[in-house]
Image (tube, rainbow, N blue to C red):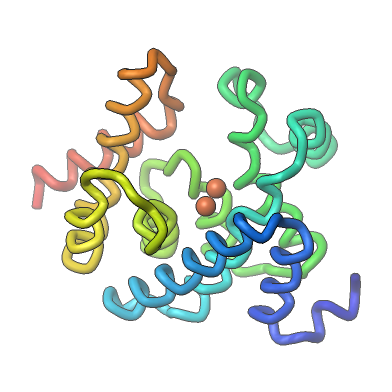
Length: 197
Ligand SMILES: [Fe+2]
Ligand SMILES: [Fe+2]
């Protein structure tokens, strides 16, 4: 594992994701990486770092609930009630920690983006917003508002993140499922700054 650090990080990240994921999820990973890279370019953010975050974001998505809880516990990652109920919510934080430990990724904003991509976080930075939105609008995503969201993502990243959060909260409500408190807080943060803009 150690000599991975010598390889150019994006290639190492590609292998890292590919060997942990089914073809279907690896395909999603590549589309998110492409979309994140493109969105970063549009918004004046470093496209290489966006691609790296995209490649790594779902790397642990196929672990079992027990594995998520076990790794989170042994690495002392925060585990709240929502994560205990639905351990796959930990796939971002666990992927970020694994990327740090095994790939030697030390870029804090890349790690934050990976960590926060499922729920969002109030005050999340531009790279986190890029990944959050790219995950929702990659070319294979297909839901009624995706075309509008894709256009919005190029004009207004924060607006696109807010719209996407509103959609997922509404979706949860329709299905009687709780929304993670971090998502509600992130939407409130985005809406507050939208109003102030
Ligand atoms: Fe994910
Ligand atoms: Fe994803």
